[in-house]
Length: 306
Figure 1 (cartoon, helix red, strand yellow):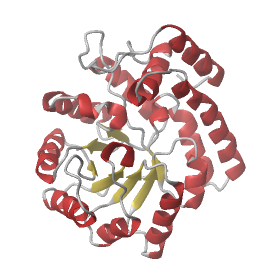
Figure 2 (cartoon, one colour):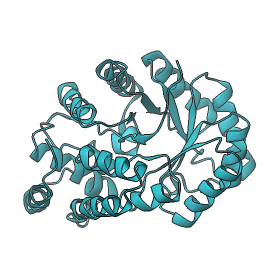
Figure 3 (tube, one colour):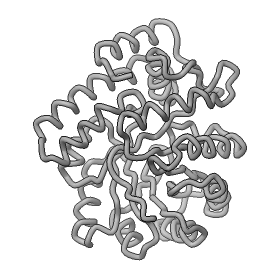
């Protein structure tokens, strides 16, 4: 069966209980809510899923749970992030064993590869699996930017099926979309830039992978549908509403990006009763006190569907 990757594919958070263990019941509530609100797929073990903090055993459990809960209703994409091809391929095997539908891989990191080595990295991963491979462009994490020409070349060669662009580089994103279109659109292109989704879709993106989509999936789905229908005025209106909700990530100060951003998403979901705790992976602190109260106020004003 050919699976279509498009639309709104949230990078699913990994809920933890108060002891720091994987909260599978909360994970199921979260996924069921996402599916009920019309998302087109799930991306597990991405940055929003705290993949860097999870052991292989924990990753395997999250993957198996996601596939079980999704039950074929939407495709499941799995992050296989690690530092070198051999280590990534080990993660690919975990994902294959769980039964996911696609894998998402970053460029190598720590090893500081050249452009040619980065391209070889993706070719080695693709040669090791029959699953569709998506390139994850996230320079803030891996300290290198994926070249649009290389990505299109990998698409034309059948090495990768698409790109998740979380670079925040709108010029490079536009260049990628244009180069992909000129080459016959071998790639499915997603933006991970949560507050300019309307612009990305207008430029030609095939969908969005928004961390904030964990909190308000319905609004993102409505935004995508408006773009498909060519109702750009409505798309902008929805994007402005989403941008107001996105203010939750700016409520914490003096903490890491994980604590401020993912902590805000988890705090919002705990406030909505979707997950039981806003606990973060160690050593990241969980948000509390006035910060959580301000997040709750913003969420209440936004009124996401529960």
